[in-house]
Length: 112
Image (cartoon, rainbow, N blue to C red; front, top):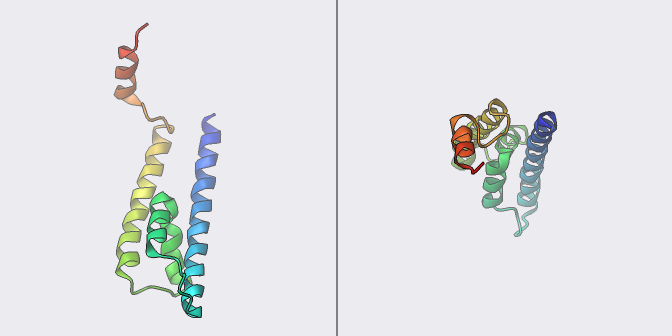
């Protein structure tokens, strides 16, 4: 079961980063065309928080778009580190929320 969870986490992280890259690309195309209904920065921020910060950060350099934006150049690397921290901690704890002493404390409280 653990291998399945690890594979799902990897697939999710890869797909959310591809999605965020494509979201940034569509924002660039909409801005070049002068479209008023362009993708807002809030959508990029939510996608970054969900794990797509690396795709947005890489997309800024590949697409040469919004490299002077303080939002992307400062906050995206910070969010990348936070995302990687949670993924690494998930792998260390085998994606089990109640691990270690907290797990044993919870088990001891339950009636037998």
